View 1 (cartoon, rainbow, N blue to C red):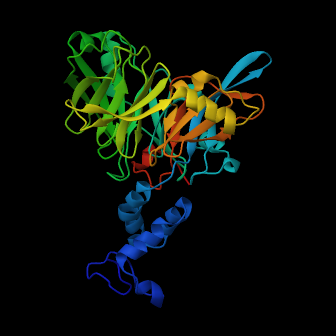
View 2 (cartoon, rainbow, N blue to C red; view 1 turned 90 degrees about the vertical axis):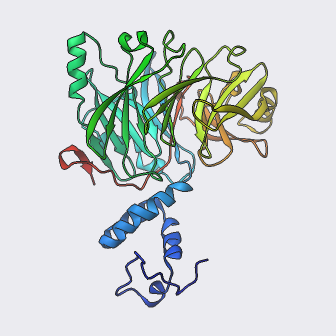
Length: 410
């Protein structure tokens, strides 16, 4: 229990020259107050002194991330101009503690990145960090929109040489592995699909660590029927493991601590035709798909090779449609197919998100309430696909990198 005036002898909080009331607060209460600051104010408090910097970085940032609300989504937009569809990257605010729409989030990214990016160059989002790639020879960039940082990841020279010698093309898909509650460091994981690996029933990844500043290649046995069909270009990170789906409806698990790989069947794999959706909510990996007129949501219990799927929600698609027609926006038409697949999960609540070309909808499972949280501007649309939305929650962690790797740090 935290008591005012009960100060630990090994307190890390600076108190010299503090006002009387502040100096009497215990550590836990000071930390609780700081973590309730808006994200930008918390970052500014690091400038008070070196001890405050350490306090915010080592204690407040992980705690802040524990209950940080969903800020919004990045998505691929489209508009019909001169009878030609033009695609672009767009940001949708959903009322969390993120940069407001007035700050023109996408435009601020243009100021951070050293190249003119398109929607194709944005490839992953993970706990407040964004991953971009440029060029046919991949050059990766990690951005934190909140702290206005852009880190240029060193090129993987060894992989480039191997590709030239083997006459292979380098893949540009990669994913971030980052959780500020675990560490202020992040990893970039690049996947290699060369036939030499699949023929040997193995998987190969190259991992860059911001802690070491180096790329390391790992080849792992993967004895499962997952090499015949492509893998979905989407990844989810949770508790040291990176997850991906295959079109053969297997869930791939890449353990980035022990560097092993496993594959397990998706739920009702033999009964469902499409690949489904994976996402993280409340520190669990979830999978969703529809069977007939019912939308199912499962979570993975006891992750790993022996993990099992547990049904969490079974929702009537017809009821979702009726709810929308009753409480939704009458000027936005959402076809029945809108509710047959998830677009996103809220990382900290039971809310789930659907979408159509003109709107993003949030469904509260507990209360069966359906609401429209975002609508596109006139003449613009959301490009509909299986993974249309990239979730974003603001991150107060200052990215660490060598001086020459920092592109922008305002």
